[in-house]
Image (cartoon, helix red, strand yellow):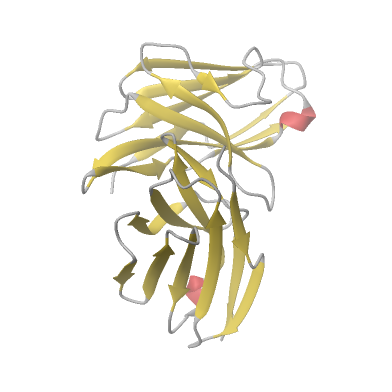
Length: 110
Length: 117
């Protein structure tokens, strides 16, 4: 089955700096890679996604890159703000199911 | 985005009782819904896939007799935790896919925090 690894587990940055979270997946059949932001006690919220026929996608301060050959995908947040502080999960779609990474706790200090 | 609701948001029950959690897609139909469990500071672990009109598909290690799933309609799936024990205390979240830009995007419910005393 699919296995998704996510690094780092925690990430602290100064407001205005960039943050990068990386994920790898194991099954080349996975074709859809969403990123979710989860605040404490709340539901995961989809922030950006990328499909396997695209190498990069950007939405304002958030971008995602995908390297299918290496089975890597990454989330990039630029000009971080304190409200970006949350846990971020990557996921890979495998056989109609989403398999999640272990999560990254991002803290943005003012 | 699409809206998925869950009820109740919190439940506290005694050990040995059963608890039912409802998941509804409010503005779209979902033939498939997914149930996840999330322990504190951990990731979302898929428990089962709920299928409208047929049996649920359970992930390895999930007891189907303990976690009963019923997909009663195209907008409602229920998860019943039977004979709950303290180790079942967790955050249970459902999700439902809806088609966006040529593929299905999953939207999550707000979750149900279950505490078993």
